[in-house]
Structures are given as structure tokens and as C-alpha cells.
Image (cartoon, rainbow, N blue to C red; front, top):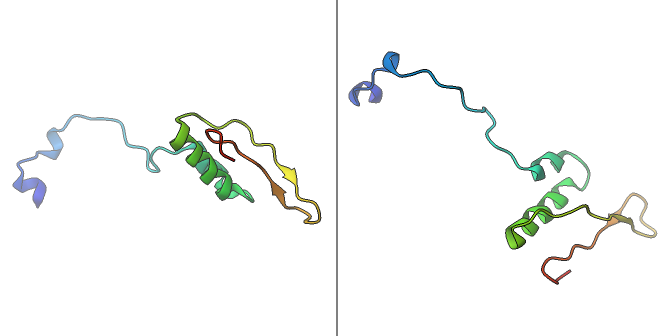
Length: 80
């Protein structure tokens, strides 16, 4: 109804490519599905927002006495 009121003739509109149904995505979104992925994605996003640069590889180290738990330290503009 609104389209008709606006005088838009749908059949006269030019053809164009379809939009991506899921829209654009970030690399951080790709790692959400793995263990620890949400935290890594959050840290990577924060790093980019602060530095305007992509964060390099993260050196994950096992935590002594906690099997399967790992830790990492990230330097963002001199703060860890």
C-alpha cells in the first residue's frame, strides 16, 4: 500500500543483484564457534578499535594445574 501511495512502479524498476542475506561479517565472528572464541573475538575487536590495526597471532600458553585452560597476554598501546 505504501509503495502504491509513493507512486513506485515495481515492475518498472531496473534489475540489480541481491543483497547478501547475512550481510557483511568480521573475522572475529568466524572464531565464535570454538572454545575461547568469544573472548578472543572480543579482545581482537577491542584491539582494532583502540589501535586501528589488526591484532597478530596470539601466543596461547597452558595454565599450570588447569588441564585444557590456556592464557595469553596482549599488549595494546603499552598496556597488558
